Amino acid sequence: MKKLALHWQILIGMVSGILFGLIMTNFEWGAGFVSDWIAPFGTIFIKLLKLIAIPLILASLIKGIADLKDISKLSRMGGKTIFVYILTTLIAIIIGLSLVNIVDPGKNISQETVDNMVAKYENDSGLQKKLSTAGETIKKGPLQPIVDVVPDNLFDALSKNGAMLQVIFFSIFFAIGILLIEPEKAKPINNLVDSFNEVILKMVDLIMLYSPYAVFALLAKVIVSTNDPDVLYALLQYGFTVLAGLALMIVVYMLVISLIAKRNPLTFLKQISPAQLLAFSTSSSAATLPVTMERVTEHVGVNEEVSSFVLPVGATINMDGTSLYQAVAAVFICTVLKHDITFADQLTIVVTALLSSIGSAAVPGAGMVMLVIVLGSIGLPPEKYAMGLALIYAIDRPLDMCRTVINVTGDATVATLIAKSEGKLDNPKVKNWDDHYDDNIKSETN
Ligand code: ASP
Image (tube, rainbow, N blue to C red):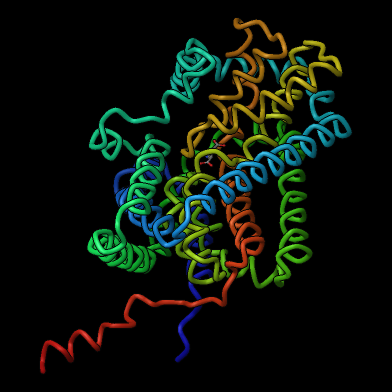
Protein backbone atom coordinates (compact mmCIF):
# COMPACT_ATOMS: atom_id res chain seq x y z
CA MET A 1 0.00 0.00 0.00
CA LYS A 2 1.29 3.45 -0.90
CA LYS A 3 2.21 5.40 2.21
CA LEU A 4 0.27 8.58 2.87
CA ALA A 5 2.41 11.65 2.01
CA LEU A 6 3.96 13.31 5.03
CA HIS A 7 1.99 16.54 4.69
CA TRP A 8 -1.28 14.56 4.81
CA GLN A 9 -0.12 12.69 7.88
CA ILE A 10 0.75 15.97 9.57
CA LEU A 11 -2.58 17.52 8.54
CA ILE A 12 -4.49 14.57 9.97
CA GLY A 13 -2.49 14.95 13.18
CA MET A 14 -3.32 18.67 13.32
CA VAL A 15 -7.05 18.25 12.70
CA SER A 16 -7.31 15.42 15.24
CA GLY A 17 -5.38 17.53 17.76
CA ILE A 18 -7.79 20.44 17.28
CA LEU A 19 -10.84 18.17 17.61
CA PHE A 20 -9.41 16.46 20.66
CA GLY A 21 -8.63 19.85 22.24
CA LEU A 22 -12.19 21.03 21.54
CA ILE A 23 -13.65 17.90 23.13
CA MET A 24 -11.41 18.34 26.17
CA THR A 25 -12.58 21.92 26.71
CA ASN A 26 -15.99 20.44 27.62
CA PHE A 27 -14.60 18.76 30.70
CA GLU A 28 -13.47 20.52 33.80
CA TRP A 29 -10.37 18.32 33.99
CA GLY A 30 -9.76 18.53 30.21
CA ALA A 31 -7.22 21.36 30.13
CA GLY A 32 -5.23 19.84 33.00
CA PHE A 33 -5.27 16.42 31.32
CA VAL A 34 -3.97 17.85 28.04
CA SER A 35 -1.25 19.87 29.80
CA ASP A 36 -0.06 16.95 31.91
CA TRP A 37 -0.42 13.99 29.58
CA ILE A 38 -0.54 15.21 25.98
CA ALA A 39 1.41 18.49 25.68
CA PRO A 40 4.75 16.97 26.83
CA PHE A 41 4.88 14.93 23.60
CA GLY A 42 4.78 18.17 21.63
CA THR A 43 7.45 19.68 23.86
CA ILE A 44 9.72 16.68 23.22
CA PHE A 45 9.35 17.21 19.48
CA ILE A 46 10.27 20.90 19.68
CA LYS A 47 13.25 20.01 21.87
CA LEU A 48 14.43 17.45 19.30
CA LEU A 49 14.21 19.99 16.49
CA LYS A 50 16.08 22.59 18.53
CA LEU A 51 18.63 19.96 19.49
CA ILE A 52 19.71 19.49 15.92
CA ALA A 53 19.27 23.08 14.69
CA ILE A 54 22.68 24.30 15.89
CA PRO A 55 24.71 21.26 14.72
CA LEU A 56 22.86 21.45 11.41
CA ILE A 57 23.71 25.13 10.87
CA LEU A 58 27.31 24.47 11.82
CA ALA A 59 27.78 21.46 9.55
CA SER A 60 25.78 22.55 6.55
CA LEU A 61 27.05 26.10 6.50
CA ILE A 62 30.70 25.07 6.76
CA LYS A 63 30.12 22.47 4.03
CA GLY A 64 28.12 24.84 1.84
CA ILE A 65 30.71 27.61 1.92
CA ALA A 66 33.67 25.28 1.61
CA ASP A 67 32.00 23.80 -1.50
CA LEU A 68 31.72 27.28 -3.01
CA LYS A 69 35.51 27.19 -3.46
CA ASP A 70 35.62 30.94 -3.93
CA ILE A 71 35.13 33.69 -1.34
CA SER A 72 33.93 36.23 -3.91
CA LYS A 73 30.94 33.96 -4.64
CA LEU A 74 30.07 34.10 -0.95
CA SER A 75 30.10 37.88 -0.75
CA ARG A 76 28.02 38.12 -3.94
CA MET A 77 25.48 35.64 -2.64
CA GLY A 78 25.46 37.26 0.80
CA GLY A 79 24.81 40.73 -0.62
CA LYS A 80 22.04 39.43 -2.87
CA THR A 81 20.41 37.50 -0.05
CA ILE A 82 20.29 40.45 2.35
CA PHE A 83 18.98 42.72 -0.41
CA VAL A 84 16.14 40.33 -1.36
CA TYR A 85 15.28 39.71 2.29
CA ILE A 86 14.94 43.43 2.93
CA LEU A 87 12.90 43.84 -0.26
CA THR A 88 10.39 41.09 0.63
CA THR A 89 10.03 42.48 4.15
CA LEU A 90 9.33 45.96 2.77
CA ILE A 91 6.69 44.52 0.44
CA ALA A 92 5.09 42.77 3.42
CA ILE A 93 5.01 45.97 5.50
CA ILE A 94 3.54 47.98 2.66
CA ILE A 95 0.82 45.35 2.13
CA GLY A 96 0.07 45.39 5.87
CA LEU A 97 -0.09 49.17 6.08
CA SER A 98 -2.28 49.47 2.98
CA LEU A 99 -4.75 46.90 4.28
CA VAL A 100 -4.99 48.33 7.77
CA ASN A 101 -5.64 51.79 6.33
CA ILE A 102 -8.31 50.48 3.99
CA VAL A 103 -10.09 48.15 6.44
CA ASP A 104 -9.47 50.26 9.55
CA PRO A 105 -10.30 47.39 11.94
CA GLY A 106 -10.00 49.63 15.03
CA LYS A 107 -12.91 51.90 14.19
CA ASN A 108 -15.75 49.60 15.25
CA ILE A 109 -14.44 48.54 18.64
CA SER A 110 -16.57 49.91 21.45
CA GLN A 111 -15.04 51.56 24.51
CA GLU A 112 -16.61 48.83 26.64
CA THR A 113 -14.73 46.09 24.74
CA VAL A 114 -11.50 48.07 25.06
CA ASP A 115 -11.98 48.46 28.82
CA ASN A 116 -12.78 44.76 29.16
CA MET A 117 -9.72 43.63 27.30
CA VAL A 118 -7.41 46.03 29.07
CA ALA A 119 -8.79 45.01 32.48
CA LYS A 120 -8.44 41.37 31.61
CA TYR A 121 -4.94 41.25 30.14
CA GLU A 122 -3.04 44.38 31.19
CA ASN A 123 -1.59 42.68 34.24
CA ASP A 124 -1.29 39.22 32.75
CA SER A 125 2.09 37.75 33.70
CA GLY A 126 2.87 36.66 30.11
CA LEU A 127 2.20 40.15 28.83
CA GLN A 128 4.24 41.79 31.58
CA LYS A 129 7.14 39.49 30.73
CA LYS A 130 6.99 40.59 27.09
CA LEU A 131 7.04 44.23 28.18
CA SER A 132 10.07 43.77 30.38
CA THR A 133 11.96 41.92 27.59
CA ALA A 134 11.06 44.78 25.26
CA GLY A 135 12.28 47.31 27.85
CA GLU A 136 15.67 45.56 28.03
CA THR A 137 15.99 45.61 24.24
CA ILE A 138 15.16 49.31 24.04
CA LYS A 139 17.82 50.15 26.63
CA LYS A 140 20.59 48.70 24.45
CA GLY A 141 22.60 50.98 22.12
CA PRO A 142 21.78 51.15 18.40
CA LEU A 143 24.82 49.10 17.31
CA GLN A 144 24.39 46.44 20.00
CA PRO A 145 22.67 43.97 17.61
CA ILE A 146 25.79 44.01 15.41
CA VAL A 147 28.07 43.56 18.41
CA ASP A 148 25.90 40.64 19.52
CA VAL A 149 26.48 38.78 16.26
CA VAL A 150 30.16 38.25 17.17
CA PRO A 151 30.66 35.48 19.73
CA ASP A 152 33.49 35.63 22.25
CA ASN A 153 33.24 31.98 23.12
CA LEU A 154 32.29 29.32 20.60
CA PHE A 155 31.01 26.87 23.17
CA ASP A 156 28.90 29.51 24.81
CA ALA A 157 27.35 30.35 21.40
CA LEU A 158 26.75 26.68 20.61
CA SER A 159 25.00 26.18 23.90
CA LYS A 160 22.41 28.91 23.37
CA ASN A 161 19.59 28.39 20.90
CA GLY A 162 19.07 32.16 20.81
CA ALA A 163 22.60 32.68 19.52
CA MET A 164 21.96 31.38 16.04
CA LEU A 165 23.55 34.41 14.37
CA GLN A 166 26.71 33.85 16.40
CA VAL A 167 26.89 30.27 15.19
CA ILE A 168 26.33 31.46 11.63
CA PHE A 169 29.13 34.01 12.09
CA PHE A 170 31.56 31.37 13.39
CA SER A 171 30.64 28.88 10.64
CA ILE A 172 31.20 31.42 7.87
CA PHE A 173 34.48 32.54 9.43
CA PHE A 174 35.66 28.95 9.86
CA ALA A 175 34.67 28.02 6.29
CA ILE A 176 36.58 31.02 4.93
CA GLY A 177 39.59 29.66 6.81
CA ILE A 178 39.10 26.29 5.10
CA LEU A 179 38.95 27.95 1.69
CA LEU A 180 42.26 29.69 2.34
CA ILE A 181 44.37 26.70 3.37
CA GLU A 182 46.02 24.11 1.09
CA PRO A 183 43.30 21.90 -0.45
CA GLU A 184 45.19 18.79 0.66
CA LYS A 185 45.09 19.95 4.28
CA ALA A 186 41.43 20.99 4.02
CA LYS A 187 40.34 17.56 2.80
CA PRO A 188 40.00 15.74 6.16
CA ILE A 189 37.91 18.49 7.72
CA ASN A 190 35.74 18.75 4.60
CA ASN A 191 35.12 15.00 4.69
CA LEU A 192 34.30 15.13 8.38
CA VAL A 193 31.87 18.03 8.01
CA ASP A 194 30.33 16.36 4.97
CA SER A 195 29.46 13.13 6.73
CA PHE A 196 28.43 14.96 9.92
CA ASN A 197 26.01 16.94 7.78
CA GLU A 198 24.56 13.79 6.17
CA VAL A 199 23.99 12.26 9.60
CA ILE A 200 22.21 15.34 10.91
CA LEU A 201 19.95 15.48 7.85
CA LYS A 202 19.11 11.81 8.43
CA MET A 203 18.19 12.71 12.01
CA VAL A 204 15.75 15.27 10.61
CA ASP A 205 14.10 12.47 8.58
CA LEU A 206 13.80 10.38 11.74
CA ILE A 207 12.35 13.21 13.80
CA MET A 208 9.81 13.84 11.04
CA LEU A 209 8.46 10.31 11.46
CA TYR A 210 7.19 11.51 14.82
CA SER A 211 5.79 14.82 13.55
CA PRO A 212 2.13 13.77 12.97
CA TYR A 213 1.83 12.74 16.64
CA ALA A 214 3.69 15.81 17.85
CA VAL A 215 1.41 18.25 16.03
CA PHE A 216 -1.58 16.46 17.56
CA ALA A 217 -0.16 17.25 21.01
CA LEU A 218 0.86 20.81 20.12
CA LEU A 219 -2.52 21.78 18.70
CA ALA A 220 -4.55 20.10 21.44
CA LYS A 221 -2.56 22.24 23.88
CA VAL A 222 -3.16 25.44 21.88
CA ILE A 223 -6.91 24.77 21.84
CA VAL A 224 -7.26 24.17 25.57
CA SER A 225 -5.24 27.31 26.33
CA THR A 226 -7.20 29.54 23.96
CA ASN A 227 -8.79 32.59 25.47
CA ASP A 228 -12.39 33.49 25.77
CA PRO A 229 -14.22 33.19 22.38
CA ASP A 230 -16.06 36.52 22.99
CA VAL A 231 -12.78 38.43 23.04
CA LEU A 232 -11.64 36.62 19.90
CA TYR A 233 -14.86 37.72 18.23
CA ALA A 234 -14.24 41.39 19.03
CA LEU A 235 -10.85 41.09 17.39
CA LEU A 236 -12.12 39.31 14.32
CA GLN A 237 -11.74 42.24 11.95
CA TYR A 238 -8.21 42.94 13.12
CA GLY A 239 -7.35 39.24 12.84
CA PHE A 240 -8.77 39.04 9.33
CA THR A 241 -6.78 42.09 8.24
CA VAL A 242 -3.56 40.38 9.33
CA LEU A 243 -4.64 37.10 7.70
CA ALA A 244 -5.59 38.82 4.44
CA GLY A 245 -2.15 40.45 4.34
CA LEU A 246 -0.45 37.13 5.01
CA ALA A 247 -2.51 35.51 2.23
CA LEU A 248 -1.39 38.27 -0.16
CA MET A 249 2.21 37.50 0.74
CA ILE A 250 1.64 33.90 -0.38
CA VAL A 251 0.47 35.32 -3.72
CA VAL A 252 3.67 37.41 -3.93
CA TYR A 253 5.81 34.32 -3.26
CA MET A 254 3.91 32.27 -5.82
CA LEU A 255 4.47 34.95 -8.43
CA VAL A 256 8.20 35.00 -7.63
CA ILE A 257 8.40 31.20 -7.87
CA SER A 258 6.58 31.05 -11.18
CA LEU A 259 7.88 34.18 -12.93
CA ILE A 260 11.46 34.34 -11.70
CA ALA A 261 12.38 30.87 -10.48
CA LYS A 262 10.30 29.34 -13.33
CA ARG A 263 8.91 26.58 -11.15
CA ASN A 264 5.31 25.47 -10.69
CA PRO A 265 4.19 27.34 -7.55
CA LEU A 266 1.74 24.65 -6.47
CA THR A 267 4.41 21.97 -6.68
CA PHE A 268 6.69 24.26 -4.70
CA LEU A 269 4.04 24.65 -1.98
CA LYS A 270 3.59 20.89 -1.84
CA GLN A 271 7.33 20.36 -1.56
CA ILE A 272 7.71 22.68 1.41
CA SER A 273 4.32 22.00 3.03
CA PRO A 274 5.61 19.86 5.95
CA ALA A 275 7.80 22.83 6.97
CA GLN A 276 4.82 25.18 6.73
CA LEU A 277 2.62 22.86 8.78
CA LEU A 278 5.28 22.60 11.46
CA ALA A 279 5.75 26.36 11.46
CA PHE A 280 2.01 26.62 12.12
CA SER A 281 2.07 24.02 14.88
CA THR A 282 5.21 25.24 16.67
CA SER A 283 5.03 29.04 16.04
CA SER A 284 8.79 29.03 15.75
CA SER A 285 10.84 29.44 12.60
CA ALA A 286 13.96 28.43 14.54
CA ALA A 287 12.45 25.10 15.59
CA THR A 288 11.22 24.58 12.02
CA LEU A 289 14.62 25.40 10.46
CA PRO A 290 15.95 21.82 10.25
CA VAL A 291 12.81 20.77 8.38
CA THR A 292 12.87 23.85 6.14
CA MET A 293 16.47 23.06 5.22
CA GLU A 294 15.69 19.44 4.49
CA ARG A 295 12.64 20.26 2.35
CA VAL A 296 14.25 23.10 0.41
CA THR A 297 17.49 21.20 -0.24
CA GLU A 298 16.18 17.72 -0.97
CA HIS A 299 12.61 18.29 -2.16
CA VAL A 300 12.82 21.65 -3.97
CA GLY A 301 16.35 21.02 -5.24
CA VAL A 302 18.11 24.15 -3.99
CA ASN A 303 21.81 23.36 -3.92
CA GLU A 304 23.21 23.13 -0.42
CA GLU A 305 25.76 25.84 -1.19
CA VAL A 306 22.79 28.22 -1.29
CA SER A 307 20.30 26.72 1.19
CA SER A 308 22.88 26.25 3.95
CA PHE A 309 23.53 29.99 3.97
CA VAL A 310 20.24 31.58 2.93
CA LEU A 311 17.91 29.60 5.21
CA PRO A 312 19.60 29.95 8.64
CA VAL A 313 20.20 33.64 7.97
CA GLY A 314 16.56 33.97 6.87
CA ALA A 315 15.20 32.18 9.93
CA THR A 316 16.81 34.81 12.11
CA ILE A 317 16.50 38.00 10.11
CA ASN A 318 13.79 37.56 7.48
CA MET A 319 10.31 37.70 8.99
CA ASP A 320 7.86 38.94 6.42
CA GLY A 321 4.82 37.69 8.32
CA THR A 322 6.01 39.26 11.57
CA SER A 323 6.73 42.65 9.99
CA LEU A 324 3.33 42.70 8.27
CA TYR A 325 1.63 41.87 11.55
CA GLN A 326 3.59 44.56 13.40
CA ALA A 327 2.50 47.19 10.88
CA VAL A 328 -1.18 46.21 11.15
CA ALA A 329 -1.08 45.85 14.94
CA ALA A 330 0.66 49.20 15.46
CA VAL A 331 -1.95 51.12 13.46
CA PHE A 332 -4.81 49.13 15.03
CA ILE A 333 -3.60 49.84 18.57
CA CYS A 334 -3.12 53.55 17.85
CA THR A 335 -6.63 53.83 16.37
CA VAL A 336 -8.26 52.07 19.30
CA LEU A 337 -6.29 54.07 21.89
CA LYS A 338 -7.07 57.26 19.94
CA HIS A 339 -3.42 58.10 19.38
CA ASP A 340 -3.31 60.00 16.09
CA ILE A 341 -0.81 58.86 13.52
CA THR A 342 0.34 60.94 10.60
CA PHE A 343 1.65 59.92 7.20
CA ALA A 344 5.18 60.48 8.52
CA ASP A 345 4.38 58.05 11.35
CA GLN A 346 3.36 55.47 8.78
CA LEU A 347 6.74 55.90 7.07
CA THR A 348 8.39 55.47 10.47
CA ILE A 349 6.45 52.21 10.85
CA VAL A 350 7.97 50.99 7.56
CA VAL A 351 11.49 51.49 8.93
CA THR A 352 10.91 50.31 12.49
CA ALA A 353 8.84 47.27 11.52
CA LEU A 354 11.68 46.31 9.16
CA LEU A 355 14.28 46.64 11.91
CA SER A 356 12.22 45.07 14.64
CA SER A 357 11.28 42.07 12.51
CA ILE A 358 15.00 41.59 11.82
CA GLY A 359 15.59 41.79 15.57
CA SER A 360 12.72 39.46 16.53
CA ALA A 361 13.85 36.07 17.76
CA ALA A 362 12.49 33.13 15.78
CA VAL A 363 10.45 31.87 18.72
CA PRO A 364 6.74 32.03 19.70
CA GLY A 365 5.49 35.50 20.52
CA ALA A 366 8.73 37.34 19.75
CA GLY A 367 7.03 39.58 17.19
CA MET A 368 4.79 40.99 19.90
CA VAL A 369 7.77 41.88 22.10
CA MET A 370 9.38 43.85 19.28
CA LEU A 371 6.06 45.52 18.45
CA VAL A 372 6.72 47.70 21.50
CA ILE A 373 9.63 49.29 19.61
CA VAL A 374 7.34 50.12 16.68
CA LEU A 375 4.77 51.64 19.06
CA GLY A 376 7.48 53.72 20.75
CA SER A 377 8.76 55.02 17.43
CA ILE A 378 5.39 56.55 16.57
CA GLY A 379 5.11 58.30 19.89
CA LEU A 380 2.75 56.08 21.88
CA PRO A 381 3.58 56.95 25.50
CA PRO A 382 5.26 54.06 27.42
CA GLU A 383 2.46 53.97 30.01
CA LYS A 384 0.14 52.89 27.21
CA TYR A 385 2.29 49.98 25.97
CA ALA A 386 0.62 47.50 28.35
CA MET A 387 -2.83 48.68 27.26
CA GLY A 388 -1.85 48.36 23.61
CA LEU A 389 -0.54 44.85 23.94
CA ALA A 390 -3.54 43.88 26.10
CA LEU A 391 -5.80 44.76 23.15
CA ILE A 392 -4.27 42.19 20.83
CA TYR A 393 -3.01 39.64 23.36
CA ALA A 394 -6.00 37.30 23.20
CA ILE A 395 -5.60 36.65 19.51
CA ASP A 396 -1.82 36.70 19.33
CA ARG A 397 -1.15 32.97 19.39
CA PRO A 398 -3.29 32.06 16.34
CA LEU A 399 -1.83 35.01 14.44
CA ASP A 400 1.67 33.97 15.52
CA MET A 401 1.04 30.51 14.07
CA CYS A 402 0.01 32.02 10.75
CA ARG A 403 2.77 34.63 10.54
CA THR A 404 5.38 31.97 11.27
CA VAL A 405 4.11 30.04 8.20
CA ILE A 406 4.75 33.15 6.12
CA ASN A 407 8.18 33.70 7.69
CA VAL A 408 9.20 30.17 6.74
CA THR A 409 7.62 30.35 3.26
CA GLY A 410 9.45 33.65 2.64
CA ASP A 411 12.81 32.07 3.52
CA ALA A 412 12.14 29.07 1.26
CA THR A 413 11.06 31.35 -1.61
CA VAL A 414 14.13 33.56 -1.34
CA ALA A 415 16.42 30.50 -1.14
CA THR A 416 14.85 29.21 -4.37
CA LEU A 417 15.19 32.59 -6.02
CA ILE A 418 18.85 33.02 -5.06
CA ALA A 419 19.57 29.45 -6.20
CA LYS A 420 17.98 30.22 -9.56
CA SER A 421 20.04 33.37 -9.97
CA GLU A 422 23.23 31.51 -9.12
CA GLY A 423 22.44 28.59 -11.45
CA LYS A 424 22.11 26.32 -8.40
CA LEU A 425 18.49 25.22 -8.66
CA ASP A 426 18.73 21.50 -9.35
CA ASN A 427 16.25 18.66 -9.59
CA PRO A 428 14.87 17.38 -6.30
CA LYS A 429 16.88 14.55 -4.77
CA VAL A 430 14.62 13.13 -2.09
CA LYS A 431 16.21 10.95 0.55
CA ASN A 432 14.20 8.76 2.93
CA TRP A 433 15.16 7.77 6.42
CA ASP A 434 15.51 4.10 5.44
CA ASP A 435 17.33 4.46 2.08
CA HIS A 436 20.41 2.68 3.42
CA TYR A 437 18.80 0.64 6.15
CA ASP A 438 19.01 -2.62 4.20
CA ASP A 439 22.54 -1.88 2.88
CA ASN A 440 23.81 -1.49 6.41
CA ILE A 441 22.14 -4.70 7.57
CA LYS A 442 23.59 -6.56 4.59
CA SER A 443 27.10 -5.27 5.19
CA GLU A 444 26.72 -6.33 8.83
CA THR A 445 25.73 -9.91 7.91
CA ASN A 446 28.42 -10.31 5.18
N1 ASP B 1 6.95 33.20 15.97
C1 ASP B 1 7.58 33.93 14.89
C2 ASP B 1 8.69 33.10 14.29
O1 ASP B 1 9.27 32.26 14.94
C3 ASP B 1 8.11 35.26 15.35
C4 ASP B 1 6.94 36.14 15.75
O2 ASP B 1 6.38 36.79 14.87
O3 ASP B 1 6.57 36.16 16.92
O4 ASP B 1 8.98 33.26 13.12
